[in-house]
Image 1 (cartoon, helix red, strand yellow):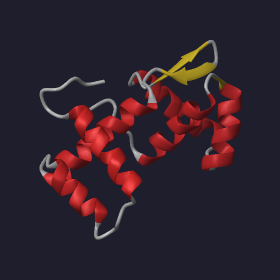
Image 2: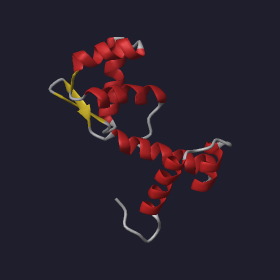
Image 3: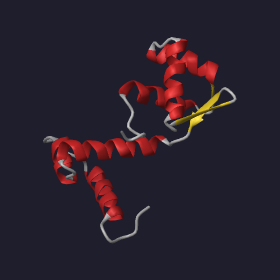
Image 4: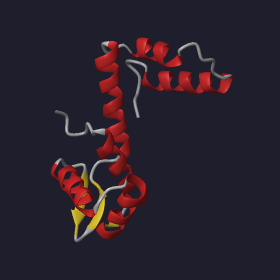
Length: 124
């Protein structure tokens, strides 16, 4: 299993950290109760699991991300395209759009992204 693939609850928990880091572990317990309805024991169990997997850090009772949110989102996006659309980005996009229209500005933004990542050209 890819260490960046997070279950829904793990992702929601990590999102609390990403949005509030660095975060004292006591505050993380409070936010987990408020936003996820988790008890202290559940919070610490999931925290330990994500620290062991290298997603989060817990140093001196201060929690922070070891992996940026963007890296997790990128891996999850690739996984969806690979699994559900046999790796075909055009097929994914066609299904995602589902008859929806986009503005000229959105079309220009998408074209700029495609141009930036076009094969054989420079990448970020």
